[in-house]
Length: 108
Image (cartoon, rainbow, N blue to C red; front, side):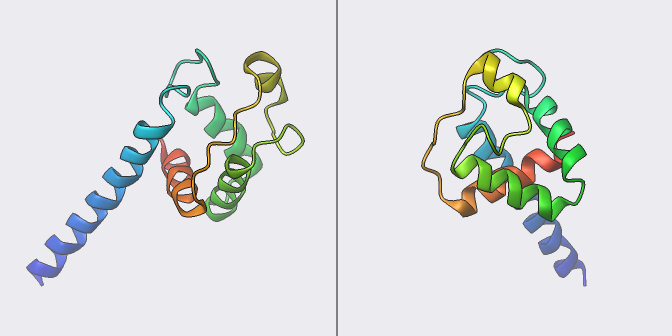
């Protein structure tokens, strides 16, 4: 039982670190957590999209789909696009974008 608990905790820590690593390795260049410099802060993105999609699965699906093919029409942050321009298409696969979106949803 102890081994199962330790394994479960280790898997959870790995999953959290992996998503965090994906975000910090790919998104932090433009999207700081609490500061808007060259793009809106992730905290503000999270707030806007969580208001529209409070259900975690819906948030992840919408966010990852939009990030796969960014467009003004599907954005909930037109003011940010006007200020910073539209995020370029980055070429990440859908699974990676879903992992990053999960991290954004759970951002504290």
